[in-house]
Image (cartoon, rainbow, N blue to C red):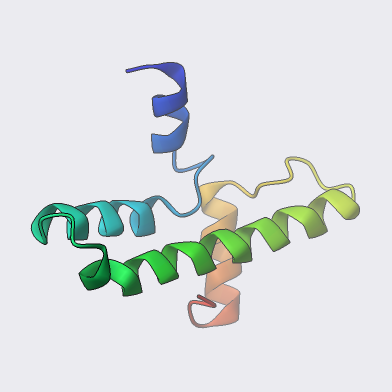
Length: 85
């Protein structure tokens, strides 16, 4: 697998891996009819927006790495009590 592909499959790098997989699976199951999978696309888009805002905030605060690890993301989501997206 190419390096880019491995990075996209790494849960420490891609915070929206499950949403990405769900939208791909929906497209496969529905013969690539985008209208049937619009809720999955919206959830993925909202996930990316949320984690991008977290990353920007961490960068502004000087926290490294700017993207929280998978364990840190689980703690953040647990503290929120529900999925923000």
